[in-house]
Image (cartoon, rainbow, N blue to C red; front, side, top):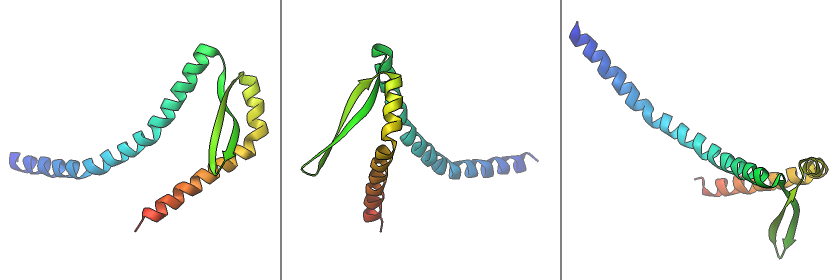
Length: 110
C-alpha cells in the first residue's frame, strides 16, 4: 500500500510541475496588465490627495505628424463635464491606439 501512495504522489507532482508554466504565464500576463493601471491610479490618487484636483487630458495637439497630449489639473466636477463633452474624441483616440497596436502585432506575427 505505501508504494501505491508514493506512485500517486509522483503523478500529482508531475501534473503540478506541468501546470506550473501555464500558471506562471497567466500570472505574468495578469500582472503585466494590472501593474500599469495600478501605477496610473496611484499617481492620479496622489495628485488628487495633494491638490484636490484631477489630471485631465485637456487637448490633443498635432504638429508635423507628431501628436502631443496636454494635461491640466481640474476640479472633479469640471473634469466630469469635460469628459462628457469630449467623450467621442477620447474614444476615437483610443480606437486609433488599438488599431496601431493590432497592426504592430500583425506585422510581428508569422
